[in-house]
Length: 328
Ligand code: UDP
Image (tube, rainbow, N blue to C red):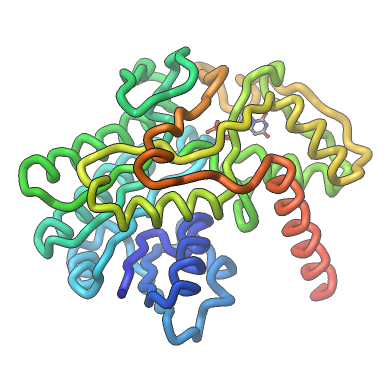
């Protein structure tokens, strides 16, 4: 099959391209390289099953052309990371809402199966544990920029559902919990690559708040497996699925584990949220996925433990450091 991945040069998109090509599919990646990177797909360039179009998701005619040529569409192009969301709120909201609208319109026109990637951020600041797909979404006030991301992604979901109900566009919606792994950059705030890079330089690990907040980290390869299973499941269409891993860890413990895994001399430095993200920032204390729906429907089971994840990311950054040192 020919598969279109919007955001195909991004962290998750490039891993998805690898997995699809391994299965013998041909991949057309589309990326504007705003947060996507050439180095994520450098190993695929020249591969007979891979091609890349450098274009913005807002470009309706290119999106239409790419969708028309594809048998399946994975829509991953998005603004990513809490830092980017807080620093560039207009771009965040416009990219998310407009980009998804363009993709859904084209998929409706050509009746192509499409998978929309949403986020666990849409659960907002609900205190429920774990988060299930039917839960209410509890989003904070509009003067707090973080919620603009959650709200835009929720709007994408409503739009996708509207296409499903109104025009029977074959669409499935996935809510990704904290996804991590090799190729993820710490540049947009993501905690694990930041901690690993800090640890490898023996710099203090910057734990925001008191570090008691928890997250459940899922290896990108498990996430990709979930995405591919849901795409090929006709019964999943018109539905929302969580994808993630249940293993919960506090951010302080995560920092300690990264220090141990790297054998670093780093210490832990507590940084108030206000210093990290400016005033009015709200973090969520816990975010745990209920995975029973995807387990039942698609036989999804994450294979990678947090230990595996940390060691994979450490290995990736050690190799990258050594490669860069040998070039200098
Ligand atoms: N975090 C941290 N130090 C950092 C970056 C992030 O303590 O250098 C915290 C962040 O405040 C949050 C958690 O780690 O509580 C996960 O952050 P990330 O941005 O990776 O994902 P989020 O779950 O916030 O979307």
